[in-house]
Length: 562
Image: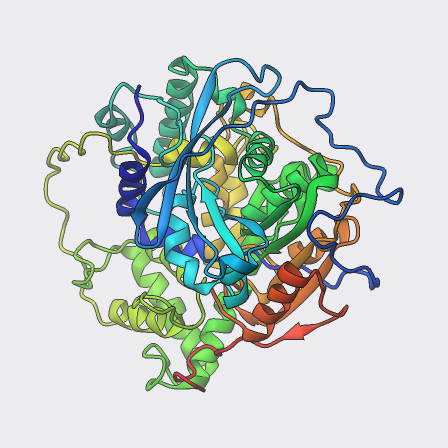
């Protein structure tokens, strides 16, 4: 199937990027705790590996993949250029069937002092870099924008890159998934429908994978793509910035190609061992997000939101109801009302169910202060939305269902794009596991947000086993040519701070930079202090001092400039 020209593909991906995807793209998972103190500094560009770095790249036995020639077309968005790169589908057969990767870059604004290229991955998994980079480009530190071409790409299986074709047309996919609850299933009939639908999706993807792509969608495959792209832009070593799930890509690259790391920022990181396999047999029986503690992080941050909303008062947080106890009681009452039936707040026009409200709250915790140009971001916006629900009438009885309109040609739900990497990289409880009991366990330990995190990876329970063929499970401690910098907010609602600390402790010689603030990713919750440290690390090779703690630029509910 021919793929669109790069500029067209970029515009399509940008148009279809959702607000939720933008929040995820700007969220960089936090580091869990302080890494051991050491005095090493990041290696400058092209510093050779030494005898102290004996680890060889894991893929040295494989034949070398051909390096694509990049022809940048532009502009495909204001200030950006796009290109397409052909890379091997299977790196065991690098001269075999290729696939296409869609790339985008913004050139260094000070070309006379350009250092090289900085590759950015927004996470997800499955968020197209061609859509995310233009959205977040202005959040990168000034000297990083001046000294580097900033490059991103749609990982294999996503966006405008070569993707899975699980269905003959989008209407067939929509017919399978249509009617599933927004957010996650609650009642037993919804849970059964959810399980049947995603079992069907997995079967369709396995039956219709005529190209063999399904077996090659792991993060390890994407890391190999990243190394080929590094060569294509002419960099001897990789300079990289990954946020959220993009931190796993960075960790996999660092361990597959440890001698090719120039500098690497991992913003809001996960615990790689807990995520991929679990650190103990007991952990292995849990879904991945429970192993990493994402449900606990979400619950802690929700509690902090309600407490700070109460302290800010109704003028700053519309949902405030006196003191913290009263505000928490109001939230509990709102959830109880939603359990009895949906509400009709008017904006958005759709009715709001219990699961939709909980999942929306979980995602709106990602940005503590408003982001420029994103009016519905920040905790004040979350407080306003909850107050709108609080005063909303009950939704009228649902009308008789009408056939859903046919999707536009070429439309994609994104489900297979997300699951391709998500399901390949983790050990998951099997399809026969009692997921309703796991959801109940999560609710017991994490409250209302707990089940949301369980049902996201239940979608992987029936995913084809061949998808895990190239999964990377470790080791995670190969010594890199330059140390890695992990950056994290202490109040991250998605990847807990403990996960970032585990990443820093697990990677050899990594350094942790802490931001004492809330939100998912430091990039999406700016801190001038952290930006300066990241800038010095990427440009000059200087790590922040061990134990450095920064403050965010704005606290939740604080007025602009405060």
